[in-house]
Amino acid sequence: MRKPMLLIALLCAFTLQAGNVERTYRKLIERYDVADKAKAVPVDSLSAFWYAAYYGNEQLLRFNMDMQKHRGAEKEAMAKTSELPRFHPQYDESIIGGMQGFCDSLLMDMGISALPVNCSLHVVYSDDVNSFTALTEDGFAMCLTTALISKKGINRDILMGYVAHEFAHGALLHHTRALYAGAKQRRKDNLLSGIAIGVGLAAVTAAAAADPVYYPPYPYGDPVVYLDASDFEALARQEKAEKVSSSKYIFPFSPDQIFEADLLAYRFLEKMGKADQFINGLRILESADVRSYDEENDTPTPTSRIEFLKYVSQNPSSGNKENIKLRDRRLGVEER
Image 1 (cartoon, helix red, strand yellow):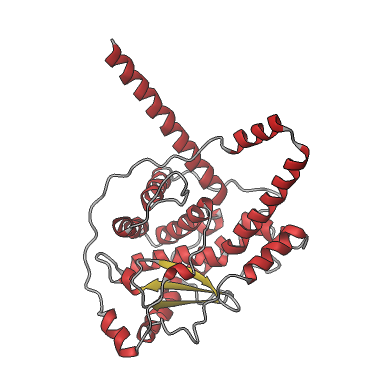
Image 2 (cartoon, rainbow, N blue to C red):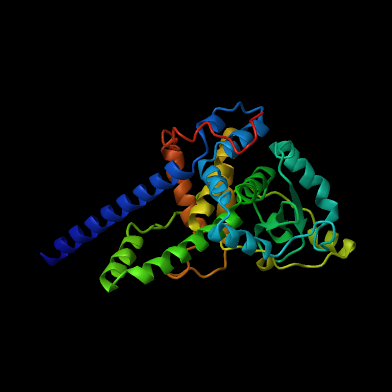
């Protein structure tokens, strides 16, 4: 009798967890998916996709409206942003100059070069299997490491997915938005600590911990096709490039920001009929990931990101719930 009861308990727990996961994924899509206008853009106009995704991003619109207040939290966010390390493409000796033509053509093929956004793409000499976004003096730089683009299975479509993800972090101002959220939270916490009693604080803490995100395991899919890569090590030695550690520029983006960047990159490759290539790119990161994930580290793992995008692909009718009052607002610039 004990064994059937245990099985029933396990089944109930599994069902509850699955329901929590689905609810979390649905909320992420409703909040961060690209605008319907971006999904409707013809495949032969990729720059129009970026325009629609950028100017139709309600979260970014609200942030820009908030920043115009220029009060305590807004000032703190801007001050902390100014203190972040800057990447200087014109001076950085980790950049592989022989790959710059490839990087520029990739941005052109993706439709990013046509956008009024100060950004650039570079291949940097590094042992880190990583891509990252670093702030520059007047915008941001997206960087692919030589260790990443030399991985087995890498192809041009997968690289586009990495670039699209990093572009989302930069163009959607995720650095400053994360710092702004932290500044607001600190002020909220200080206010609560001054007016709340112990019971009240316990209630706030319980509410903040409600509806946690669950990351179920993901079974490995089919391996990607191996493509020969250039000898970046030899090229770096020829150019006397210096190795760089991506940790210098790694920024603690929130889980929501990582999922938002994934959604935008996935939708971009989906527009090209190659959505599976973004998931394949995450599988490469999954196989190369050496970080330790524990309960104190809420950074989404490649596995959890893949599982989320699988849900996205299996629920094509889901999407961003438009806010009627804000959907036609622009960030001071008209769409082209």
